[in-house]
Amino acid sequence: MMNRKVVIITGASSGIGKALAYEFAKNGYDLSICSRREELLLIVAADIKVKFNVNVLVNRTDVSMEDSCKELIDNTINFFGKIDILINNAGISQRALFDELDLKDFKKIIDINYWGTVMCTKFALPYLLKSKGSLVAISSISGYSPLPGRTAYCSSKYAIRGFMESLRIENRNHGLHVMIAAPGFTSSEIREKAIIAGGGEQGISPRNENKMMTAEFVAAKVVRGIRLKKRTIIMSAQGIAAVWFSRVLPELMDWIIYHHIKKEDNERLQILK
Image 1 (cartoon, rainbow, N blue to C red):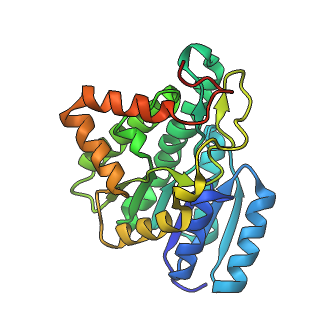
Image 2: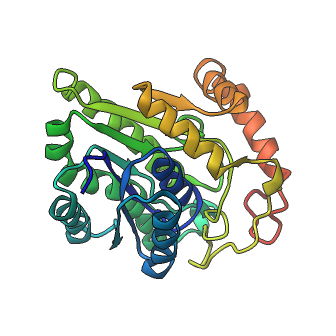
Image 3: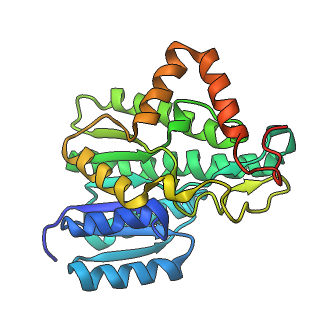
């Protein structure tokens, strides 16, 4: 096996995770990819092997389960012998007001988004420290600036930011690169799978997907950010403005966000009344 760098990507069966798999493979990395949907991963892996001639390990992983996260890391070490990069990408979103969201669904979002990041990082960290590698979280502008109807999602992204930034300081003398990537609205499957009141999935997105950044754009930014050892990537002018206004003029930003989200075609979900 060639001495390529090895990257783990969680949630790689679709969206940003899938785009990341292709982008890293294009740049000559070996891949350990995971998702709960193994059948989709196998299609991605087969296509990547043909196009880029890299090694791809497929893992059926539920990042909300500790044993499954440990198995992902163990499988990767057993197959490749090292880990150079961990991309915590797996996630799920929400479109429901807090008072309409069942607590079990709130917990599900936290378990996947936040605890998935924590647990995969816990088991991968010794190997990342050994390789002086990169630890990355695909977060969101929602980890800096809140959105109504996304209480669980925003909570998970704020928590991820605190976790990653604390971990960076703990390991500042150990050669570990820690990066938070914060895309804005990205055209992907995440809105279709977003949890709504009652625990179902949103289905067709109410937003204009054609006006969003693409998963491929995000993936290219992430790979470049790792190469340049960036701390944080906020990927749009709108996102930069949202972060700035949330810090400096929070009441004005609350008003802007409220009226912006209210314009969405969300009458069926009654995101804002």
